[in-house]
Image (cartoon, rainbow, N blue to C red; front, top):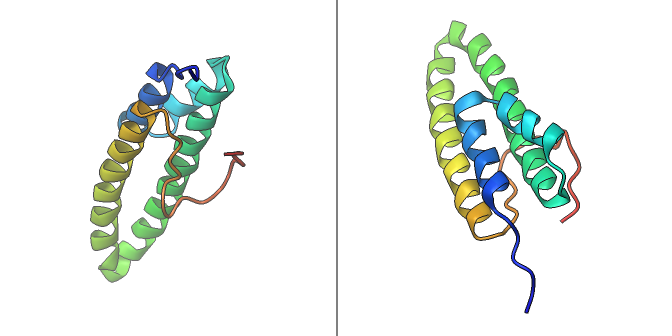
Length: 108
């Protein structure tokens, strides 16, 4: 029988990313001792840094009014993707966020 992963920190990583941006996953990356939790925190950090980049671009686009739509879509995507990643983490699975820029390399 395979050893079941402890999913507490990975779940917390994705939820903290939803509420604290990149700060929560960064703290978990720095304090986690197991590699599995670090992988989840890197996935969450990739997404949260991507959200930051996309938000900056959306802010610039607000001057031509399309930015208001992109920032709204980005907020919805952040909520949906973070919840999906949390569910996958509870199932002991790694889930790569769509549209995430790969700032950190993760070996699956």
